[in-house]
Image (cartoon, rainbow, N blue to C red; front, side, top):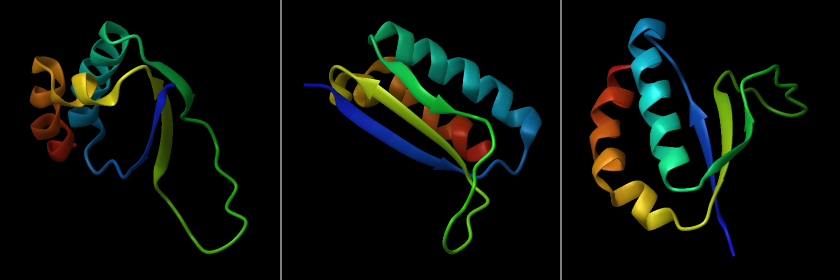
Length: 80
């Protein structure tokens, strides 16, 4: 049974976000994960939300998150 990751992303530095996107995509591919949704327009029906959303399906979340590439990503993400 796959694990699902849903992330709300608030990009404050688009230039710093580009390396993060590449690192995350490489990490996801190497673990057999696939994007279910990313980018595009969001229609908010209630409340307010300006963050981007990404949904990922992955066979196993712990190796993805705790592997060598996964551990190197958070610092890059926080800079973006």
